[in-house]
Image (cartoon, rainbow, N blue to C red; front, side, top):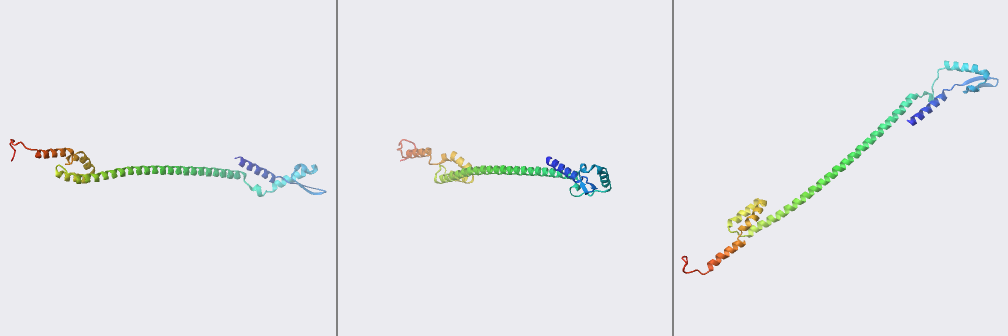
Length: 212
């Protein structure tokens, strides 16, 4: 606004200079012209003033140069330019703020996606490890069933089918119940040894079931 006021003041000063009156008189020394009324000799002032006023009334001024300027229009144009610049600056700042906000949102989304991918990778690694361990235990269980002897031979087939088609449940039941059914258990060995020793022990001839 200060710049607009300075420009307006300059235009007013120039317009006032351009519209100044020119006084003309003639004496023994010739014709004289001046724009300063006080420099006109006193004996010519009345006549010069009258002629100048008459000329100003009869002559329609033809504005040229700076006098053609419409000062209110110029001021309006300056104000419109200032408003346009202010609006442009405001839009530029709003666009810059929006771009920064979009950049922050994109960075936040990228960070969230990276964290999600890292969590998923860790989760998958844990489950792969668990699956690998279960697979190893499953293979070991099948091998154990194959090389083992059971008190009831048909139980070997039952446990094999159960572990093959229901791996987790079959292994759990096998290690809880099936191990005690193997003929290689301590109780089975003790019982087998006792039966064998009973057969080899000398019998009492007086016993009813003694056979010669």
